Each structure stands twice: as C-alpha cells, then as structure tokens.
Amino acid sequence: GVCGDTCNSRPEDTQNFTALLAEFRRQLDAVRPGLLPTIAAPAGPDYIAKYQINQIHQYLDAVNLMAYDFHGTWDTATGFHSALHPAGGDPARASRLTVAEAVATWLQGGLPASKLIVGVPF
Image (cartoon, rainbow, N blue to C red):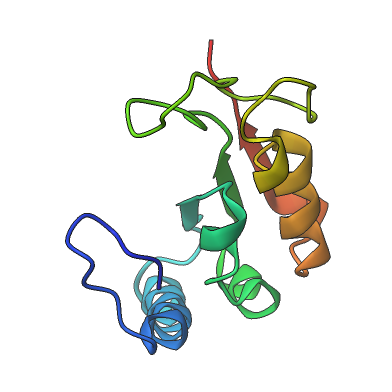
C-alpha cells in the first residue's frame, strides 16, 4: 500500500482488499440479495495503482471517486482543489493529479464507466 497516517501498509494489502470485497459481496448476496456495495476511491495515481481494478469491480455496484482535496496543508504551495484538466502554473501539474486523469486511470484499469461516480466539491 501507500504510506497512510501511521505508515502501516503491507505489500499484501492489495490482494487482501480484493479478497475482502469478494467475501463481503458473497456474504451480502447470501444474506440480503439486492444490496449495492460501493467504495469511496482515491484519485491520486499512487493510490489508484494499489487497487486491482480489473478484479474488484465485479464485487461492486459503484466506485465513488473522491475527486477533490487534491491540495491542502500538506503541500508547500497552493494548488487547484480539484482541477478537471492540467493547468499552467499548477505546482501539481507533473503529478497528473486531475479529475480527467483519475477517471481515465480507473477506466483504463478495467472499471466499467457505468460504475464510476465522480465526487466533486461544491
């Protein structure tokens, strides 16, 4: 995984998350068919890379893309909160941190477009 609050990720977390979703879906379908499991998913490329998109989507009815909070107090420079496309002057331009890039990455990973919900700030 990617280092979180306490840097407690392990290499097997990616596969374990996929297995968790598979079992969660199996249990939901057995107990109460018709429920719609979803996840809130990251927009940053380093985080997206930790998901087995081509596998997890079969266990989910939707992926809610958190396409906001691209910048904050953790940054050394002010940047666009949730840029749709790269913009000149954005310090994060090289990081590919845009809504369009995040959507493209999830779709290229195998997520059907019909399952993608883009969360935006307002």
